[in-house]
Length: 166
Image 1 (tube, rainbow, N blue to C red):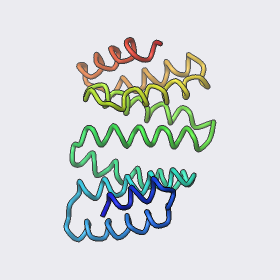
Image 2: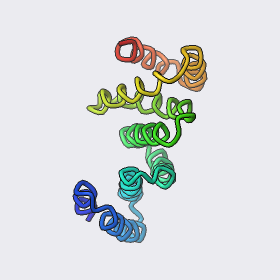
Image 3: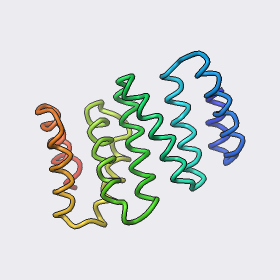
């Protein structure tokens, strides 16, 4: 059922897609499948994002993120952070700092997983950082890194040096 919703969304039939996703969420909740539920919630968020309903999209991304964290779905977490960084970036120009924090989480996740989404997330990073002063970027980066495990910090700096410096 989710695939039908994704096709509807790709065709611009957002209301049909949302209807399908809503039915899907109800069925999945009844089955207790958290992984499928997190994907369905993320799809609803993406549909709202495509409609330009950014605040609604963020609400569903937050719900999906919570479940993906519970499931320790590293790839799913990175994808949701990426989607959130794009949404926050589009929401308001003065929200770039929050978008950058989401983007750091997405970048690090994609980098560690060797994900195909890394290039797109780097592009979002460049869009965000083009609007901020270098001092602010460094401040946000230092705050982000301060919560990470030592090995993850090394990954983050390797990522920064390899991809983000260009």
